[in-house]
Image 1 (cartoon, rainbow, N blue to C red):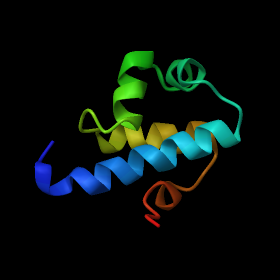
Image 2 (image 1 turned 90 degrees about the vertical axis):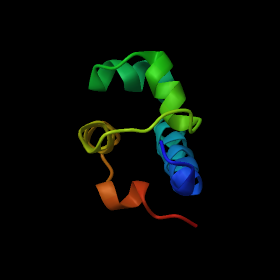
Image 3 (image 1 turned 90 degrees about the horizontal axis):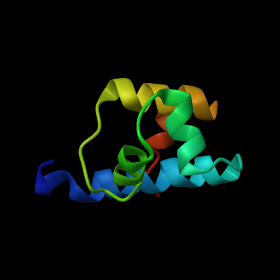
Length: 74
């Protein structure tokens, strides 16, 4: 992950965590739904790794939110 996009990844992770918690899902349950490890899910939410669009699309689908909502940085 490039340092120049640090803030964007951070906000993306926060949005994913927000929608996950809003639906009462643990990191483990969401990770299972999209077939990744809980550790990877944690790293995505905590801005510890880059994430592919495929995974972002899967997360949005699993959370039943439009993809653009994950990129609404407030």
